[in-house]
Every structure is written in structure tokens, then in C-alpha cells.
Amino acid sequence: MTAGPNISSRFCDLVGITYPVVQEGLGPYKTVQLAAAVSNAGGLGTVSIPGISEDPAAGSRKLRGYLEQACALTDRPLAVNIPVGSASDGAILPFSAAYISAVVEAVGDPEIAARLKVITTSAGPPGVVRPLIAGSGLIHMHKVGGTRQAVRARAEGADVIIASGFEAGGHTHARPVHTFVLGPSVAQAVDCPVVLAGGIRDGAGVAAAFALGADAVALGTRFVASYDNSDWHPAYAQRILSATEADDITFMAVYGPSRALPSRGVDELAEIEVSGTMSVAQVTAWKDDRLIRAQRDGEMDAGILPAGQISGAINDLIHVAEFVPRVMADAVEILRSLQARTLVADVAGRVAGVAEGVAVQ
Ligand SMILES: Cc1cc2nc3c(=O)[nH]c(=O)nc-3n(C[C@H](O)[C@H](O)[C@H](O)COP(=O)(O)O)c2cc1C
Image: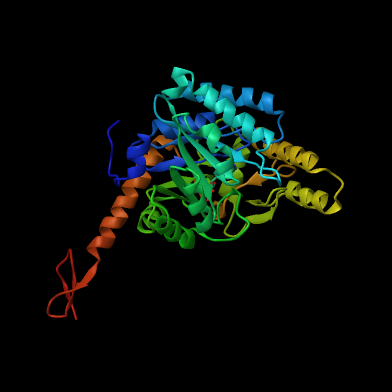
């Protein structure tokens, strides 16, 4: 691959990718085509889990199939995302244990090991699953929404931290810290590469993320609205395009707040939670069904449509192969033009434009 303008990144060096752009986990949706497209474009694509209400054994078989399909579509590094669920006594929930075990088993296959380089955990702290992952050879990224969580995840063994601001799509965080505040705090608090996520759609967002101390960016919603997302019903992407600023809502989604576009499905979920008529397992299954119906069948009304606040600023579908190099080229261009506008005081105390050499009184 011929690389265009780029920003050097220890994250790229660690993972073996060209551009510091990650397509993050988008469960319970199938993201095989999208993950391969992002990896083929020089970024890092992520395979997502089928859901947390699946029978663990059946879900694990499905995930293994997804990994095999994604690996057949690219020769470049891939990631897989597994949310960490733990019980009140700290024990790992069966779905997390099963999915992680399936991933570790999968990298025993040389065809998969040649491509699957990263496991991204999210939701609960990673310490409980570290023993399952350690020794697998996988780079362990963990996603957090707060600085204390970042420090803890690093201490528990994560190699890379994803700092995800509250404006992100999907399950977001109990405490609403936004990307601009979270990024520099996490970058200063940990000694490993930091990937910044939440509200990024273009080169300006990428340039800002690097200025805030990030080593890479992760995007979710932006990649959903792409021509390469053929695993999803096109109505989902069109709904993101039609969203306007502040259309997005947060709601309680069983285990914590989630950000989505409004729909009858979200309203019905709220009614179910208030009524207390279903067990946690039943509500989780009901919610997974409504999530899947949105993505698979294009049910924009009855379905639940996770999406970030950035939905209101996304107006076009992208071709991933063109988009990934372009956001980096745009970020480089923005940083260069900012440098050209930089003003410094010279020894005489005058302020000058560095690049233009123009004296400013
Ligand atoms: C449709 C959708 C599904 C998501 N599912 C997951 C998931 O299964 N696991 C996870 O860690 N994050 C999930 N997320 C969050 C993304 O991985 C990512 O952190 C987020 O989209 C970044 O913010 P952005 O949407 O503003 O780009 C999801 C996000 C969306 C939009």
C-alpha cells in the first residue's frame, strides 16, 4: 500500500498498521465487511460480537464464523471487541468468558493468528479477564470513559487505552465526561498508547485528537454510514444521514446509559424497565432483538438504533478505502495550516508569523 500524508504513531508501530484510524466494535451487529474494508484501507477494523443474550456456546460459534469471514477478506491486522460483564461478586459473566475463550482458541489457527492482532475489551474493568487473554499473543486494548478507569485498566494489564467521550454512540458511560476533557487527562495519566473516541468524523477531529495527546482515533458512527457496510440494512445509514444536530438521545439500556437515535423501540424499552415486568435476562434479550431488527431488517421505528452525537453532523456515505487515507491527509493539512498561522514572540518582543515571517505589531 502506498501511504499518503500521515502522522507518526506508536500505536501504528505496535499494531502494524499504516494509518492510526480504528473502526471500533459495533455489537451486536455483524461488522465483518466493514472491519475488512477498514483494515484493507490501512486502518484497524474490528469484528463485533453477535450479542450478550445469545446462548454462550452458540454465540461463540457465530463469533468464530465472523472471525473466519473477516480473515478471508483481508491480509492486514484486525481486532475483535468483547464487552466485559461481571456479576456483583466480581465473577466474569458466562457470555464474556465464552467469547474471550473463543477468541483465544481462534488464534490457535495460524490463518486467524496472522490477522487477528488485537482484542478490545470494554464495559467492566479488564482485570477479571486478563488471565484469559494473557499469553494469547494478542495486544489488549481496553475502553474507558474516565481517567481513573484508564489508570486501573493499565495497571490490570491493558497495552492500549481507548478513551471514549460521553458523546460516543452505543453504550456510553455512567459519568458524562466528554472527549475534549477526557483525552488529555487520560493521555497524561497512562504510559501507553491512547486511542481517542467519541464524536470524530473527519480530519479536523483527527487533528484535534492528536493535539489532545492521542496516538490514534477510533470511530463508530462515521463508519456505519458507509457504502462498505453491506452487513447492515441501508435504512440505518440513511437514518444517520437524516439526523440533525441534537437528535440523539441517551437512555438507560439495562447495564447503563446508551446513546441512540430516538425510536419507538427506545420508548418501549423505557416502559419495560419502569414496569419491572421482565427479568434482566428477558430485557437484555428483548433489547438485543430490537437492536438486530434495526440493523438486519431496517426497522427504524420498532428497532433501537445506537448512534453517536456526531450523527447530526454526518451528511454523506463514505467509501472506506478513500476515507481512511483522506482523514489523515486532511488532518496533516489542518496541522500544517495551523503551524503556518503560529505566532511567536521574537527577541525584540515583537510577535511574528513563523511561516510567513510577517511581523505583527
Ligand atoms: C451501532 C453501535 C454499536 C456499538 N456497539 C458497541 C459494542 O458492542 N461494544 C463496544 O465496546 N462499543 C460499542 N459501540 C461504541 C463504539 O465502539 C465506539 O466507541 C463509538 O461509536 C465511538 O463514538 P462515535 O460513535 O462518536 O464515533 C457501539 C457504537 C455504535 C454506534
